[in-house]
Amino acid sequence: MTSIYSMRQALATNLATISGLRASAEIPDNPSPPIGIINLDTIDYNLAMNQGLTQYNFVVTVIVGRAAERTMQRKLDAYSEISGPQSVKVAIESDRTLGGVAYDLRVERSNVVGSITINDQIYLAAEFTVTVYA
Amino acid sequence: MAKYVVTSNTVTLNGGTVSPSVARAELVLNAAEVDVTDFGSNGWTEVIGGLKSGTVSLDFHSDFGSGAVSALFQDLVGTIGTVTMIAGNGTAPSATTPRYTATVMINSFTPIAGAVGDLSTFSVSFPTTGAVTYATA
Image (cartoon, rainbow over all chains, first blue to last red; front, side, top):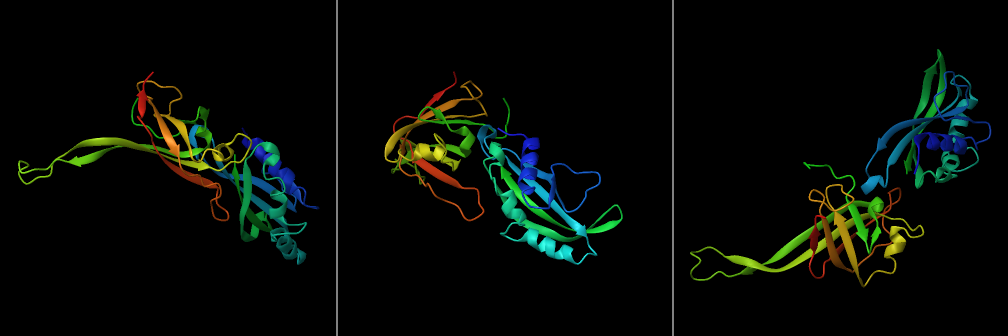
């Protein structure tokens, strides 16, 4: 029914509906914040007979900008909201079948809200765990 | 055929394949124990086999799509159905992938189940009626 590549692309498409947020289906060499990056974490096979259901666990890393900038925390707060135009959860769940390649998906949680280092720069980032059933 | 991990046993209901929505399948065959203990049993109980019975238990992933499993069960409660199960991850009956056919009383269906955040599933357990047959070809 599905391919991992298609799911990545569709998740990025959903994420890109947030105004001002870039989305990358794969890990870029030099991410330019604010950006959401789709990473495949784990796959749980054989949830039904005949490969009838597989659970894909994605991690969407949203990098908002340099940690030193005051507004970045507020931007991260907006991305972490449960509703609103900047909500990552709302954006990713805007098409829960990912254009027909999945049965359903759910943004489970946001975690690891804090700083990460990329190319010697400290950025604020959050990870969103997304469970996709396909 | 050797020991195997269950990944794709085939399950049909009334002729339609439902395997991709089945997370667990179980067929249990029983024979009643009839007590024939008497004064000649030397202090031990003695039993013989009585009437046979069976139970088909299936765990499903809910799906109300057209022709999907939840929609399929909607009108079947109270009816007699036919369940076939092919063991050994088989798709056709053979010596190493035997097919069991059971006529069952579809006595329950749980269309809505699950807590928030859970994958929606439902489980059924049907008593068999009549003989459970076994085929290897």
